[in-house]
Image (tube, helix red, strand yellow):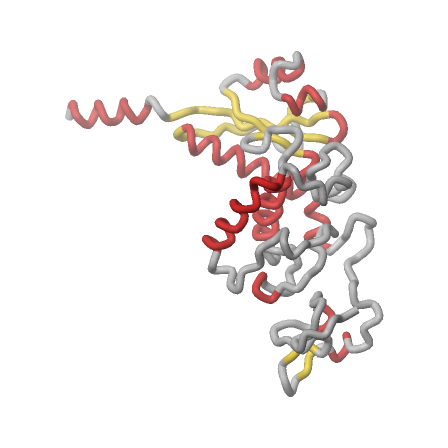
Length: 263
């Protein structure tokens, strides 16, 4: 009995009672954090002793849209819950506008944003490479993602199968050293040179409606007269590129199956 009591007491030492809070900031920005004393923590943020993000974008108050809530568990459970909440708000408000948890730095690296986009694409049931919902990554020939960013062949390592996630992780870690020095996404995002997501468009809207940065709906094949008969019933192949597995009106191939370049 004494042994059991000791084990219970030992576990309780690591069991935390925390508050998960979301701050509404100026400039339509948000910050997510955890604390044992919400009012004290809010005061620290207002006095410039909270986080770098809340020094750049001054706190207004606790968010009513994302109310304060209590979380209980071991330290790692609370921190994972914090990261989950950060990503949920990023999905609705845009990556540019939200910080907290593992993503507290004002200037996220391009590799961080690529990783976030991949997770949010997955969360909405989209292709892990481009975010569109009409195909899987092993059938992805998109030249732009659902947000409108150009996908470079050397920027994303498209695997033959989505089940080969381990290979994808190894490929991304090999690229990570060069991410901070790569300025291909330098013009995206007014407050962060490395972000490939414009704060003018919420990621949630882009994923749901296919809206690009200029507010137009994605339609790369306006001149394709074969969209109405996009799928060859006899051969089960796309009329545009000759590959199987997708329709011509959702074809992003740059070359046909025979190697001829497409316009």
